[in-house]
Length: 65
Image (cartoon, rainbow, N blue to C red; front, top):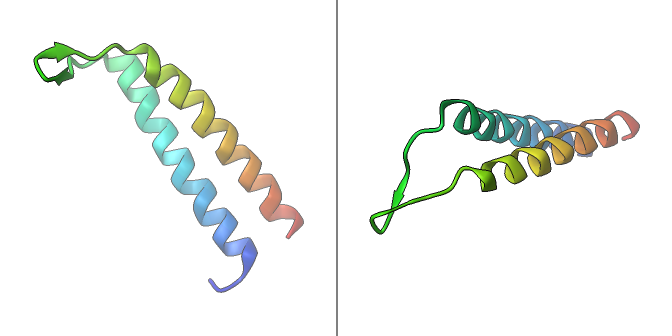
């Protein structure tokens, strides 16, 4: 796992798992309280898109390495 390819793939998988977590929050819409105020769900949509793009980008980079 000392190669750039392995590191990029691991990072890609981790970003993909975090994207799935954000997608779950979008679908399940659990009530999250922050200092007694309900946190909105829309930031999870932005986080899902960003994490998914990063995951795909790193996976493609790992194929070139």
